[in-house]
Image 1 (cartoon, rainbow, N blue to C red):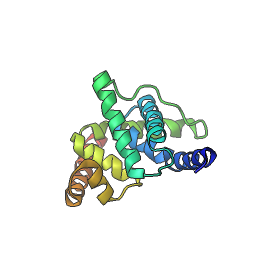
Image 2 (tube, rainbow, N blue to C red):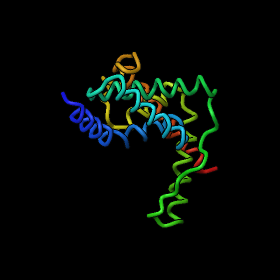
Image 3 (cartoon, rainbow, N blue to C red):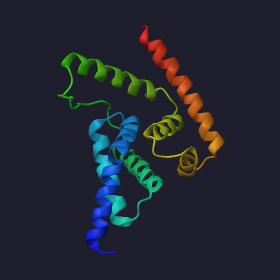
Length: 164
């Protein structure tokens, strides 16, 4: 395969998965800038080591490992720093959406780490339960249980905070 063909395929792979991977990382980290950095590192690692390969579960494994590498280096930075406003929306609506997003991210911090990770992977919409099980090293049945528990816990946390 020629270099230009590899680069074209890599660009298409990047465009096809960048938004969902970024969303996964945002749910995992709660930090826009950290998620951006990890996403760039993920694609750089993927393209450098697996040139031309388009393996979505591998991409998410690399992202998870990049996230864990960052934790080891930084000992977890504070979450929810500056955000980039959506200039296309109504300013009042933008504030409401941002606040709701922050509330959900804070609520996800109340989940166990493994539940937060599994729920984030499911919400990315790119991986099946089987692929998530392989990625996390657990059974598919265990993944389903963790997702069910995480959703229930998240619902309780959000319900409690809504009326405070």
